[in-house]
Length: 357
Image 1 (cartoon, rainbow, N blue to C red):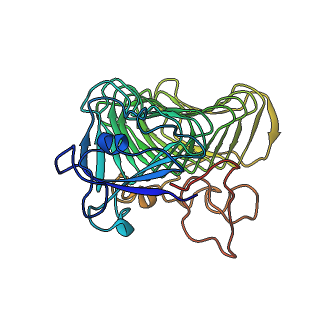
Image 2 (image 1 turned 120 degrees about the vertical axis):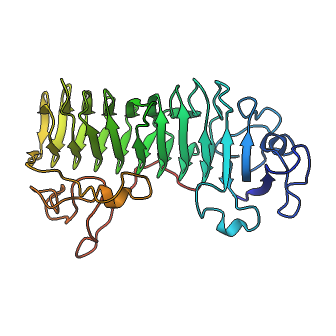
C-alpha cells in the first residue's frame, strides 16, 4: 500500500500551505479537507492543534481497511526523527466535551491527545487499523479510549482520566495512573474476546484495575494501588488470568482477583490486599497463585511513565522472578522483567493486532 504523506505545522496560519515539509498546512482539519482518502494517508503534525469539534472526515472521504488514516507527531523539520518523544505534536479538545476522533481506521502515534471535557478522548477504535501507539492520553472526565476488541492501545501514557481508561480495545504495554483529582473508575476493560497484556497500573481510592469481559484475558500486568477499595482484576465467563502481580487493594472490600465463573488461571501473585484470589469455578488451575509476604515491586525512584520500568521492576520475593507460566520459560511475573531471560525467548501478538502506525 502506497501512503501519501502530508505535513502540518499548527504553529503557522491555519488555512495555508500545500502540505509539504517546506510548505506545510497550518491546521489538521484544513489538511484533511484538502486531501482525499485514496489508498491511505499519513498526516505528520507539529505543534499544538486545538480543535473546535471532532475531526471531520466527510470531505476527506472513506477511511477503512483499504484507505487508513495515520496521524503522527512530527518534529517540524525531519520526518525521520518524528518519534523522538510524545511532545512533538498535540491535539486538544479545548475542554469542548467532544471526542478528538470518532472515525474507525484512524491511528495515532507520538502525540499528546487531551482536554476533551466530558467526552472520551478517542472513540470508535474498533478495527485493526484503529490504534493509539506511544501517545499521551489525558485530561478527560469522560474516559480515555473507547472502542472494541479489534482496536488496540499500545505503549501509551494514560493519566488524569475519570471513567474508563481503555474501554474495549486490546491494551498492550501501557502505563495508566490516577491523577490527584481525576481517577479511573476502571483502568482497562477489554471487550470480548480482548486482552490486557503487559500493562502497568498505578491506582488508589475506589479505582478498579482490569475488568474482563467473557473470553478475555489478563496476562503479565503489574497493578499497584494505594489502600484501594477496588478490585485488581475482575473476571467474567471463561476469563484467562495468568502471570499478574497485584498489590495494595487493602481498603475496605479491596480484592486482588474477583473472578465470576469458569476461570483459567495460574502463576499470579498478590500482596497487601484485604481479599486475595476468588477464582469462582476454575476450569483450569495452572498452580502457583501465591500470597506474597513482601512487595513484588522494586519501587525505586518515582512512580512515573519515564521511570516505570525501574519502579515496577520485579522484586526477588516468592516466585516472582522466573516464576511465570509456563514453568521454565525464565520470565518474571508482572509486566516488567528484571533482566534479559537466559537462553533467549519470545512472545506472540494475537492475530489481528496490526501495529503499522
